[in-house]
Image 1 (spheres, rainbow, N blue to C red):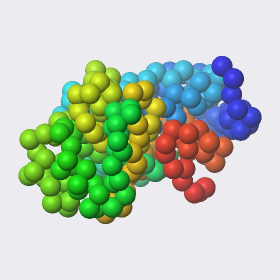
Image 2 (image 1 turned 135 degrees about the horizontal axis):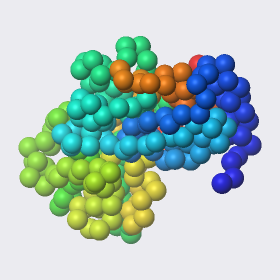
Image 3 (image 1 turned 30 degrees about the horizontal axis):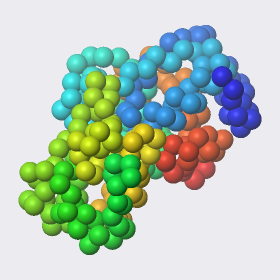
Length: 265
């Protein structure tokens, strides 16, 4: 695998850091991660492994929701992880349940809820509240995620728009990976006319056209963050991984994934 110059430079600096922070040698680092940040992790993870000698063992699951694969559910039943990468709402839940180390969260990137239609279909203007409201009322079927974005829209966003009762009968929640699929895949097959999810989970799915992000009035502030579970066995290496994934040198990969890099800390 070829790495960009910036990622190679970052990996070299990271290796020096790990020589100082982790004297145990190469280890298996267990990562639980949700879909929204996965494309960034998938691209940068091999550089981390190559530069440090550590092996990343990855488990996927939604940040929230009632799926048995959801990260809070996995940790609550005793599954082990050295680091979790998920949206901030999920980490809030972990902290409330005493499943994450207090003060361990590290912001990685900002994300936004967007909408797709099936490829070739007309794209409604959803840049205003009225436009989004009209698009929802006109749609014959609507798909949302069963994780944070869909939960927010179903419980808050659609109510703010004044359409919650009107669209409840035609709105379907989609269970995400690993056993489920992305909302955009359902729209691509024509099983929903429009779909909503975090932008990174929409823009690289074949068979759909990205319409845009929802208006700021119904756009919750969403950060993807890393955090240490209570049972983390390699906290220093986990922190180094989080810093690697959120560094200025990783900004190009983060942007390509449909996320917004954070200002350098």
